[in-house]
Image (cartoon, rainbow, N blue to C red):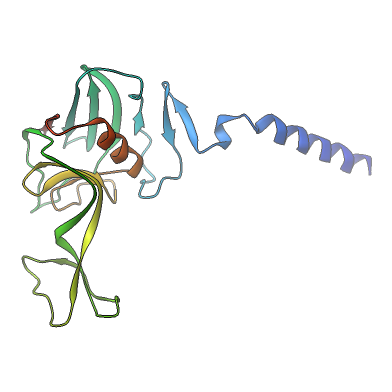
Length: 197
């Protein structure tokens, strides 16, 4: 009986003591910024993505390193965020060069890649390329979602997407959702983006 009472008191004390422990919250402090845990679309291997730019000032710029599969966000030349990315796979490579943000679209949908659906909304054909896969009669096209889209050239842009740990996109730069959102909120049309090998 006494043992059960002691265990109950210790459990309660531990629970109260952990209430303010950052380890039990979804946002974990990281260099004055935050690093979210359990993000949808966040890869298990991502132990580097962080944002520390909310209180930083200066002109934004982005550098994407294709070899590292990382995007670096700067404000006034100071590094304030890093994101893992998944860029273009073989045959759909992401081109290197100096670009600028030319369009922002929070709820962007691909006009080329997606699914063909039946009239009832069920998937008829998954992961189609409209340039190669003719639409069956009676079907409708459902474009792939690309939240927080930041176009840099042609059909290529940065956006939230699946991160398998290697280049796997059709040329776009996929990012974890919370990083795509932070980048999106902190760029404007004209922000420079350098893509290097």
